View 1 (cartoon, rainbow, N blue to C red):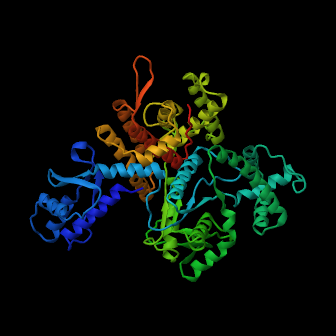
View 2: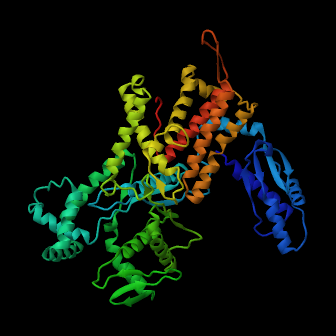
View 3: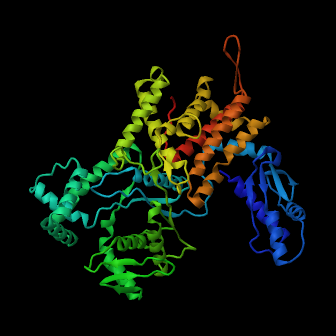
Amino acid sequence: MININGRLQKLFGEAIKAAYPDLENPPLAVTPSQQPKFGDYQCNSAMGITQMLQKTKEQKVNPREIADNIVKNIPDNDCIAKVEIAGPGFINVHLREDFVSKQLSNLLVNGVQPPAIEKRKKVVVDFSSPNIAKEMHVGHLRSTIIGDSMCRLFEFVGYDVLRLNHLGDWGTQFGMLIAHLQDKFPDYLTVSPPIGDLQAFYKESKRRFDTEEEFKKRAYQCVVLLQSKNPDFIKAWKLICDVSRKEFQKIYDSLHITLIERGESYYQDMMKDIVQEFEERGFVQVDDGRKIVFVPGCSVPLTIMKSDGGFTYDTSDLAALKQRLLEEKADIVVYVVDSGQSVHLQTVFAAGQMIGWYDPKVTRVVHAAFGVVLGEDKKKFKTRSGDTVRLIDLLDEGLKRSMDKLKDKERDKVLTAEELKAAQTSVAFGCIKYADLSHNRMNDYIFSFDKMLDDRGNTAAYLLYAFTRIRAIARLANIDEEMLQKAAREAELILDHEKEWKLGKCILRFPEILQKILDDLLLHTLCDYLYELATTFTEFYDNCYCVEKDRQTGKIVKVNMWRMLLCEATAAVMAKGFDILGIKPVQKM
């Protein structure tokens, strides 16, 4: 698909260069117009260029003259019908109807294709990343949903994506878990221990660790034996990891999320070399037996070796960063981690630059931070008893509420049992994902089932209903896939009515929305766009008859095929948008 905004930016970029060849990096601003009277797009570069000329050349210039100069230099093209200069120098752009019509026909014939990208990049996304022996809680929900959606976008545009689950599967807590395992299930090497509730098991071992001196000593010995790769201890460690893994997988399966597990343990053998590399380069200072690294511009040093010779999170995060850059040869590395880790990650990235693993001008390493989940009381989201909310309970509650909502609307009377079940999971998990993704991830967000499941406003419930209604228009007019395909190839899309024109342009903004998200990794822009598309479609449908019926008999008198094609194009873009957000729509609801 063509990114129309990108195409216009290229044309105006060339026009500005031709009109003002001496200007270095002149401002280039092209945006969709907010009102139809100002055309379809606006170029607002003239005002910025005026300021530049006044600063550099110290000459008085009128922005309208500059706008006029730019317009005179626009190269010949197939997309602009006319331009007008308005106000202090805004350039209003009107698109050619045949250009828009042709782009829509291409979309209908070829499907929703990604915008063109320069080269196929290798992307590593680190997300979800729960800790072994602890349950996934609502905080992991954000990382999991946001990370999965980013991966889906990168995959759609054709990048080579590595989805990594950086599990907390190594460290001192395994000492106490293994020591407790030996006491509770002494024959664990031959009989698989029936640890049903790992959370309780963790709490028991933690209580003993905090209160029993003898147990604490043994726990530390277990850590040493595990780190020296003693086979019995490795087996105990694997058993504990497996129990957790099965629990995590239930959640990933429910939410249709795929990940490659690569926990902290994966990087253990690389840590010694990391310390050595920093030492050889002269970056290490010894402080009270610890080996620390000060990174220019960062307030807190990294501790790469403890005084007892053990490694830290800092060491494993450095090892992971190096592996992703040098072995995976990533062009982009994204860490989807809560904003509380911001200082730590910025320090790790800066250390990677300092030692020469990557150049930020060439390789993009970003922390895609997110805020916390709040309850409706605007405090940190907890259960009534003050515990962290378990993710599995939250998903079950979502399923229950979504079924109640469907039954309130008496959908159980018109849908088959199978259709009802599909609608239930689509709404439940769609709403939970969308509520998260539709907020700017940098902000905290309030978790409310009532708001999520409301089918009015910018919610998944509203969009999923809108989508099934659009899909039903053709079905009720007895128009099948084949007839639509034939029409797409042969019929011309007429966009004479203002609502047809508005909808056609809105559909074609999809590639520029995706491009913006590739730049800033803020997915709420896609949610806002889908909501705008759905409301623009409603305006069109209320004003333009797609199917005309006899008032007396209700028989179909006429089908306006070009309007049916606009319905189809809207649904196709919505379906791809849902796919990127990880939401599964259903045909009947």
